[in-house]
Amino acid sequence: MPLRIIAQQLSHPTGFLGRVMGRLMNRNNAKMNAFAVDLLNLTPIDRVLDVGFGGGNTLPSLIAQAEFVAGIDRSQIMIRQAKARYADAIAAGRAEFRHGTVEALPFEAASFDKIITVNTIYFWRSLEAGFAEAHRVLRPGGCAVVGFLPKSHMDRMGMPTDIFTARALEEVVSALENTKFVDIRMERPQPTTSWNIVIARRRLTDS
Image (tube, rainbow, N blue to C red; front, side, top):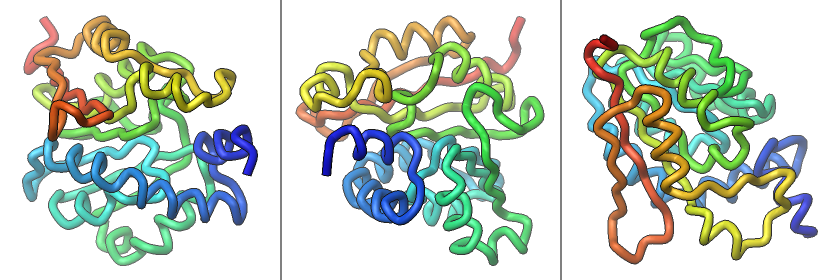
């Protein structure tokens, strides 16, 4: 399959290829997703937002551990799949899935205790715009967990630059700082792990 088609489907899954890509994303991202979910330190009273949930690999763990889980994705096929798969959680008022983008999250301010996003920041139009929205919908003291492959790794993959924007760790940290996040740190399960998980917190008070 041409690399450009793969990149387009990773960015915005559609049709039959989108369903296939969702399964591949779940398999390839399983370890990163699991590590990112662990770093959320979920409790039974948490309200969690998953930005760009894609194939939905994080959703079973989030729904099992948190009080409420919202997911946002720009792929309608991923939303339909999630709504069908987690119909019981939706009916119980413990989950909902909406179409949208990180730059304009369709939620009220201070709606969530925790936010997770894995392998999505390559497709954001602006890190600052996305993190500003994440900051807005987080409650004071809430945390965001961001998983991604760093620019050095992404550049070797040769993805089309008009679809993928590779992000250096320093760029991600700077954008978080510029949007008022604090206590920013990076975690990896092993020093040789190719991907990064960045954790950041909204201050208890914005003064």
